[in-house]
Image (cartoon, rainbow, N blue to C red; front, side, top):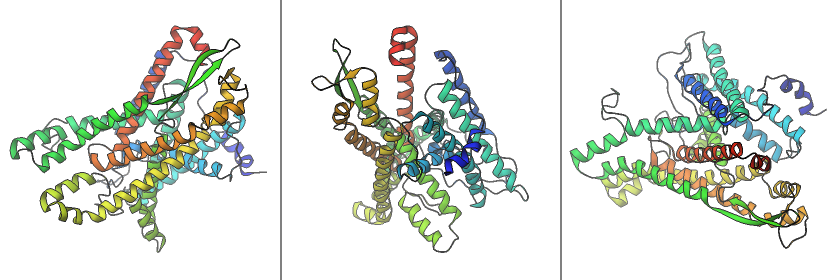
Length: 467
């Protein structure tokens, strides 16, 4: 009896959101999605009971991606959910766990195992925060603090399942987009004097005040640069989402012509979510093991390579280009580059590792999500579609699709990795490049799903075709 068979009684007994018997109408989908997002924001405002005053936030660069808020019930955010997915993907990809993801029964077992593993990691990561020093529980409150953090992530786990079955898009994407959008607009347009700790207000007001007081100089350029870069990233992502390759297909005996589009962002932004969540967990493990001989030093080196620092005030790669411009303006070009050389080296290593991780996760996701050439060929064949000029054989379709899908998967993964990494090093505290990338991609996919749902409701025949 294998491990899956031993664990099946446990994960089969876990509560789950029942799938709808009938496809919910669009208005109800929007209602459930709005409800889940509202609960997410409420959880972010509920402070964990039993904490001492003061929260040391060492994951500020990752909070947007983890949909977390340190010190609240969503301190761990979606981190345990994403980490469970990453680890199980690696185990399945390495054939350590024998699951055929093309089989519906095996896929259901995988989802059950992933839910069980995610719940275990909720408690594990709930313990990492207080034990690593990021949270300081009051005496005797440690286990209650851990339970509250774990409960917050478990609630997000079931909200994600609720949105997936009754809402629009995915809950994880919805939480990320909501958190990033809220933070971005507040950081840019926060009115002056409302926040006593920052009387100059948001980034836009700081830029206006700097230009009015000192004129347009390096300091004002650094303040303006994140806003401009965020807008550029927005335009690039919108353009990239529209890029695709059309593969001609024919359907039916009469040979009705059509096209099968393979998007440039075939894997969307999922590789970035998985890669950055992995980097965030590396930092957490590094903080938890920093006092362990040898292992602590190894984790410190790995944490540095993934763009962070275990030091409380370590800046890492976030806002690297802004600091570089300030040093060049203060010391000159040559001396400024020399002064920033160690941080630039860290940024280069981080960018390479991020791209590699995105490519690996992109290839895994294509295989796991039923988007590989083999899976798509079977889907087209079962729908009565074939490529004109070739025999009606799924192996022929697969061979043609292999010319496009694997290269586009790699190119798309490299593209989103570079865009997210460069954005992280440019945007600073305004937002992360990863957060902007994910938010635009998520909102674009939600828009597409809304359009498909509305079209299907208006035209029953199209609904049958889409189904």
